[in-house]
Length: 372
Image (cartoon, rainbow, N blue to C red; front, side, top):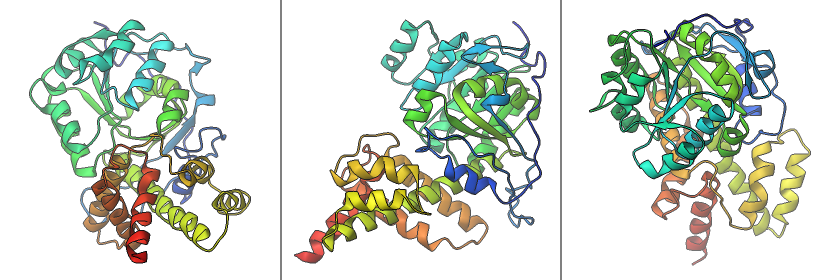
């Protein structure tokens, strides 16, 4: 079997750390799939009171600077066989894009039927994460929560049982910092390399290959899999040691969840005082607080329709993890804490699998209770 670390692709552009990465990420987040990426730069706090964190070394690259162009693979650093674990709303289109680009892909999912479409497109199938990792140079995982990520990485028949020296594991799930560090520890004990690479983006960007990868961990593995990241995404950030990618993703999703809560309040208030909420959406789109997320989600929210691009249960999970992150460094985030309560109420109403914009229903319920 070909060794994973065959040769290094052209390094991505390095950028001085500045406090603009987070705002850049937010401006190009999951709902900005039709916009061009504004190059972002990064910084984390200069002091890290919590031992989970280390100051990142940052580099940044866009698809335009990659070795992948128009779906064709260029360069010698391309892994021979690629595994993909977890074929849900995000994982399935990501794996499909790898297949379309000509990659040799092997898949696994707890529910095997979710593999069928990809198998029909030419993917191979293995019956466990261990078997996928054993047969592939690089294995990606897109899983729902920290518990699933841990189970797949080093549970029974997990990746750690099949992976070894010369191979790499790239977890693109959204998990907390401690979980990512645990997975890193178990994978490195096998002699393999580990990269955390949570994605900023939802269903449509995943389908269009427009995700943003927030990576941290083994830099050689990062350079090796960069052509694969550039098939699935429009930009990628290397943030240094394991934990920094997870932290950045939680901060981004915390802000997104809080924004959606505030937007929901505005839509309902405008309607309550006799204004047309559709006009509110248009007014917002013309001003300084314009957001692709508001423009995309607003019209369907006015109609009480919530087609799932990012499930509400996952947004609430990310809010919960962000609250834990803030607690670990004694940082107050009262706005996010209040928004999290709205998502919890929405879950209690059976909206877990609806889009996270369905959080507006928790406010509608409170309105009706107050009126009664």
